[in-house]
Length: 192
Length: 73
Image (cartoon, rainbow over all chains, first blue to last red; front, side, top):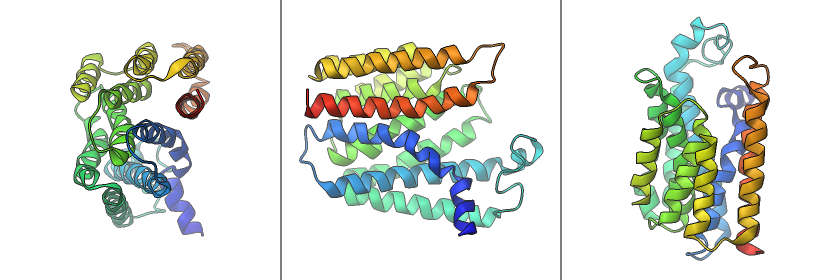
């Protein structure tokens, strides 16, 4: 039980509830244009939680060395030795595989797009090394929730409403320190 | 950024027939974001965690009002 708690703490599992409504809102909108099925809710939730778990795990993994040097983050699971780098790597791989499987359970298009979603959420962790506009990429990572994990998984066509929902998520999560042009272009590209 | 968030939320009502319930939800979300902004200032970051946690409620509120707009409104 202690081991499970360590993993849940590692990815701040309880915070999944923050992101889940955005994915489900995307699904709600998609169900206006596609038939509803209960099993889709299950797979949307599995996809959302697994994608977020993979992203959080990857973030902790690549930042572990820097986290150890920062008093605020030194007690995170990898720096304090509660999880090894190998444990974290396996966790990220398994979470990613669960996400891909869940995506294919919804439809083929989403399954094919799932590596793109993973690349986006993983890129956030690396972006902070190259730009001070990291929050824009965090916003983009959250924006794929309603888009890739939610609406596209239910109705696999691209519609303007999806882009609008994406841009809402990008702006909403990016807070106050990000690049407006990057986010606008992202949103417009998605709406096109 | 939060202003842009609200604009994008409102724009969704322009693209889809979501009705007054949805727009009411957007107004509530806007109010929540204004409150969130008021919690933190350049000179006082003590409420950052509280402000961050409010984002969770923004998502839940938006989800519920969108659901109501689609299935009740």
